[in-house]
Amino acid sequence: MYANHPPDTPPEHNDTNAMPVFQDDDDLSIISNHTGNTNNKNNPTDHEVEVNLTNLNNKKRKPASRRGSFSSNEVFLKNNSTNNITIDINEKSLSNDSDKDDKVVIRPVNDEDDLSVIITFNQGISPFIIILTFVASISGFMFGYDTGYISSALVSINKDLSNRILSYGDKEIITAATSLGALISAIFAGTAADMFGRKPCIMFSNILFLIGAIVQITSHRFWQMAAGRLVMGFGVGIGSLIAPLFISEIAPKMIRGRLTVINSLWLTGGQLIAYGIGAGLNHVHNGWRILVGLSLIPTVLQFCLFFFLPDTPRYYVLKGDYEKAKAVLRKSYTNASDEVIEKKIHELAALNKSIPGKNRPARVWNSIKELHTVPSNFRALIIACGLQAIQQFTGWNSLMYFSGTIFETVGFSNSTAVSIIVSGTNFIFTLVAFFAIDKIGRRSILLIGLPGMTVALTICSIAFHFIGIKFEGNDAHVAHEGFSAWGIVIIVFIILFAAFYALGIGTVPWQQSELFPTNVRGIGTSYATATNWAGSLVIASTFLTMLQNITPTGTFAFFAGISALSFVFCYFCYPELSGLELEEVQTILKDGFNIKASRQLAKKRKQQVAEAADLHDIKLEPTEEIIED
Ligand SMILES: O[C@H]1[C@H](O)[C@@H](O)[C@H](O)[C@@H](O)[C@H]1O
Image (cartoon, rainbow, N blue to C red; front, side, top):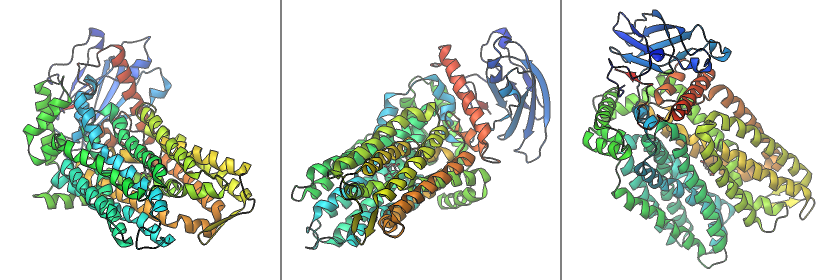
């Protein structure tokens, strides 16, 4: 809502780039020029532009239309009287076809994370943001480590619990208890984060991790172990929701995707490390207790570090603690002037008022209502829950949990090593996603990943048919014993499946916070995270039954089918959000999924950043693409 340029003082440009000012009857003024003309470098002068104004805030549609000629590269929007304006910009004289029917609708800022609108363009990431990101993403590590160690622990537990070999059902309960705990806590975590703060919730999850681990380490009975896993699950659920939320609230826009993927990197890294250590401790007496005990290190570390770190500025503003919010912003954006910080705080405070309700419970209730009744929120919910469901129902976790068993049945004696290769691939391709998510874009990596997964799963399904594998009871029978060519095919394509999965659907759903505006972010991400854990619970507990009842061929064909359908869902419903301002996300989802508009807008934002970088003016100028009050 604020730029560093006072409203009446347009930024300095040379004459050919002078910007027209339109004065509307409603005291709306627009200073506009359009990026489209960057494609028309031979004729950098005038374009005729028609600007249509619609004042939505007054609930009366009052279109006004003005024409003007101008030529510079930015769109400036200045709004003196209202919070909601739709601007249609039609360029009449662009030579470039793709931009001819450009219709960009931009709505004024309505979300606190537009912090990036003001500051992101101006300076790189500060060490303080890096520290906050890394400490928050220890939750990702806990998520990965705690879901990863259980398969090795179950092998080495032997008769240590209740003096008996664990039955298959016992193992399922111990494994599923964490997912169940995570599902339960995820339902409440988003609301708790709004009520008590993000940081206290993360620290509370540390306490749950601690209690859960101690209960497990000291357990000699099966039920105590299951209870410990459940408590630990409560912690996992909270951490899995809050860490990405925390990071997205402190991240500058152009690298928001990447910073959130750091959490996923810790997650997949945690799984890999758990597999590695688990393999090493497999034959050590009580090795599983050491494996669980090691999880105490990161959780205690995160708890201690958070004593010295703040919450997000957004949360402080929500609480009315403006001084703390300012202090965090100052440390995060060291080059930003006090004036910019001050304005940002005002902006956040103004946005906070937009959450209706006299007290917190009333606001929570209103958020729930708004999530379902406001079309853009509901679309965000469909996307967020849809992606999390796809992540789980395409079968990755069942492979994670049972890959050892599968590899043994197709003739690999060193199945642990192969499992480590599979989860290593998951980690490495999460790293690839880290580099791709802001540059290539979230939508693009999803649309590359899902077909890749479909092909890999289909080939595995066919290979299983030729291997002639059958699951009966807890045993697997293979028609042709020993190592075979089809066995190699299965390994290779499971590894490829892991790569395509990690590149797209394994990573992108955790960007969920950016889909929702402030007033429904907590509750919206709760729904999505709970969907994730519900899916994980269902798939992990039905996978072996599926192998038995519909054969491995049928099971893999089923996952391939879901992947193919998911591609269709993402193709039609998931807009490109990389580089977009958060308020633009809401605009995109306002009257549909608007895939085309999102792609055009994302492309423009990237061009603008690239141009600004060429001109070396990226560092000290706040972004000029700001909607002002
Ligand atoms: O994004 C993560 C990641 O892909 C993990 O490997 C998987 O185990 C989790 O379920 C998922 O949420």
